[in-house]
Length: 330
Image (cartoon, rainbow, N blue to C red; front, side):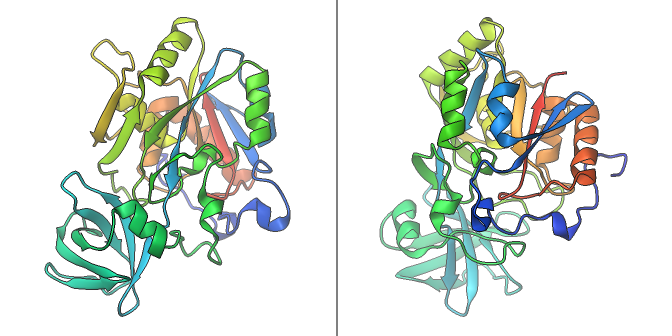
């Protein structure tokens, strides 16, 4: 790892190419790296309920994953990120074909017209297709997958146990190992669980590319529970960077989480004050990924350096089917 923390060499054989279920295991049969400041320890994910305290609160993202990859005429692959407030769609054109404004891509049952570039790899498009985005993708799409996975997997593989609100282009994968048996033990040990919603767009493929606006919702019930837990001395642990983004977008001027919903363009960096969460359960992120800036903001540079050095040394697995990292206060 370099001194910047955000850059390191990820060996290709540490990329998780298939879910643990493919080898006969369960979703929670993954490893759990725990960082408390510079102190690092190694566990199985099923130990999570014993690593938290009664009265702590896990906040999960209940957004369900859509089959958001489409094949356009001419074998152009399109990844649908999300629908914008004005009804346009934000999409990524995969491969080397690219496009120019005005191009019409023929997709099953309709067309996508390129309007203008949004970033160097994303386009705003007008979608002339039957039904809304969720219904259309459910009928014609397939789950997004990347080259490190060796085959297509059914959409169920990309759904969290508590996913109830369809809208994510890619799985909010930090909660993937939270199986029914782990959730039951959490409840039995007095550890609370509450949902927020944030519909994730396509993952950032370019180094140092910041996140873009995503739709979120924090309910009055969840906001109230967060306040109650923190007032009582409990810790709020976000399950995934999406939850951190949603909660920090709902913090009021007094530093308390309030009910809120809408589009958030919040980018969390080490200079951003973290007011809503005390810890973070997350996957292992790629070199230079913008999410690493958020991890540094939550846990500090020292914890991130120590944790990732250990993850590389002990050969943890990366990506959505990989192992998990729990960052707690020292």
